[in-house]
Image 1 (cartoon, rainbow, N blue to C red):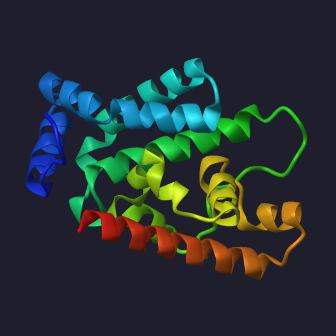
Image 2 (image 1 turned 90 degrees about the horizontal axis):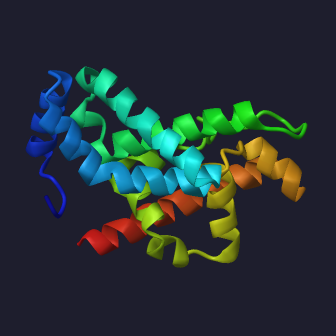
Image 3 (image 1 turned 45 degrees about the vertical axis):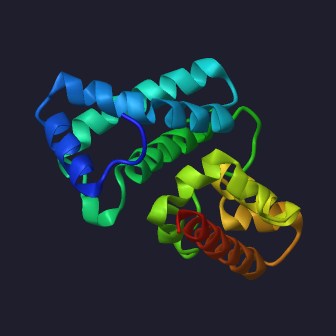
Length: 184
């Protein structure tokens, strides 16, 4: 399989996965395994951790396949969200040096902007990140790939929390616009 799946094909694939169809498991892994592994490697920084995360994500997807709702986003976005959340959980658990607990992007900073329209997939592709300024890339790196909350970023950079939230929201909106421009 190459190219994006049509929404109906994604729904069919997830129905088959929920029924335990081994071909569906293999197809989902073949299509999305590399992206999940890449995210794991970027966030967790070791091949072993990325491999463990990839296995965990696809096991979770198999177990939760019946809960996939195509109205909430693409299959790739659902899988990458599972991967991101699992990686952040591992980062929190494995933190060796004392520092505030890592958190996912604050709910007050439009998390749906990250999840919608395949923005996560485009972030991982790298060329969309290249369109950002250094400050915007750093913000996305800390908030998304390192799992820092807006409060942690504000404290680390010595800027007001509201400024971080405003910049993060503006960056996510810009990423969505860049992605939509490429998809056209």
